[in-house]
Length: 375
Image (cartoon, rainbow, N blue to C red; front, side):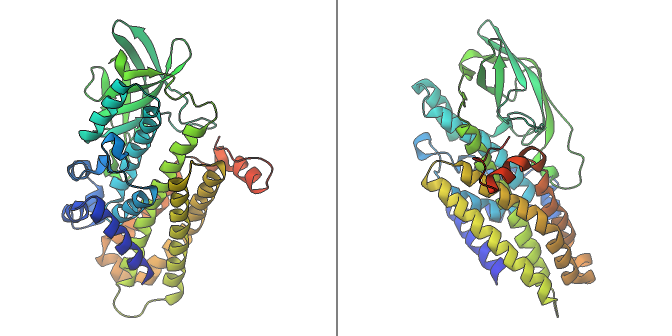
């Protein structure tokens, strides 16, 4: 059975890299809705999750992009809120890894320590705004004795309640960009409510505000993301896209598996269409992850991933509706995960980049008019 064999492979990879995590997640609640209603970040930290994709040279587990996608498929089938939240940790970590390649040894040692401590890194890069780069600073830094005073906000900011650090792109008084590592317990840093939707509450998507937060000078690195050719931004978006789609793919796999568990007859047209669709998306997603493992991210790879994500959004609503009908009223009433996962699968479309920002660039790339760019 396609759905179960895919999940079995993803679970095997996760157990090899993060042994015990899936069992502990499953034991944390009887249903996925129960697990997603509260934070499972501490469970992920206890099981070495923050170290997953950090290079071994920095003290991480060195998981490949293919392995990381499989881990997120497995997590998405059990606790999709955790998968969505931790994607942001890996996005922040990817930026630090790029910075570490040219950093001084003292700065590399700081990153090694964060990895060794399994520090949870929230993303303070730019909020999603039309036409905006995620690395375009929305926070400002004013130099003061011994460091900088940072002011700005991020909403929604996943991992906000469990974060040890928020990694942010900031603008200095000179107009230059910098990367700031802001300790979560800093004075004048506040975390407030933001996410009101009934799904994915465990992602800790809150409003984080900084009002003259003091950050020592050695935690603010000017020009750390001087991304003149857009390569770092492209890499960040690629990691984000691979893992976020993997998470929702896992949720869709579990929804199909629950429908197939129905006793008695089931509409074959509905479930086989969903199975074939998920297989096709997963194969393409893992192929793009393998490309990222083999070579630096390319504009073509980014265009292909965004097109794949759009295909998922375009098709999943129809297929999810059919799968719900195939499961039938009794299954729907007796298994709360069916309704919950059906709603979760539709949330993928709200993650950046949007077609409003990138659709025109994607069409121009498909026409062969120019190289793809995100914004």
